[in-house]
Length: 329
Image (cartoon, rainbow, N blue to C red):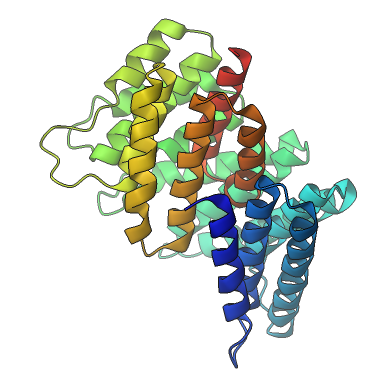
């Protein structure tokens, strides 16, 4: 499926979300914005602007619904709105809505942290609040909230029933500028037994990227090369394959990277989670364009990824990979 086809599909989903008796403005806004990005990649600026503005209208309607219900958990929607304004060139509004998102995430995190039953959920909200403060340049507040996320993470990760990803902990340190500590956490995790294939591959991918940024090419290549799915794995998922494709790309095995990326995009069509499916498809196309040195398309895809996924740890790895490939052109 090319970006034009994806854009038409997302636009159809957006219209469907607002055609029912109970209108889902949150979903409609998300799909309109995603569709807009696809049209922008295809060079249709008019369609891009129209759909982004429709997305803003839908998200504004959704925020109004939440306000009437006195629901304060509005962080994610304000974050999406901020990135839409950024894509439209409204820097002040981008900044204003990022602050609103940060404050909403922080309020939710504090409320969730009050109970042991919901404390785990507060980790992501503190983390998201920190990301927003980081994006507006408030390093002090960003660091405060990364540390709060880490405090709960470290306390709760001792509970074997909770499946925290070590990548989240490493990302907190990395985004605070403590790359050495992030590397130490991930290298320590590799010594543990019974890591899932996806976690094992992701840890090696991140370590490769972190060493790449430190300009330690030898260690970077060692980790990219080590990110192999164990041979006894019976079923390989699209996320696992896309991780392998990224590692192959960084080992300059462009043909392997493209083949794996195409395979991941193909099998991702079976994923029911639209967000995950979309992420796999966009990363797959990003890999293909990076391998083919089509950097204008790369920048457009990264812009599309930023509004939806800049809060994900994987976004850091993709940014490092993109910058490294472009520097080598």
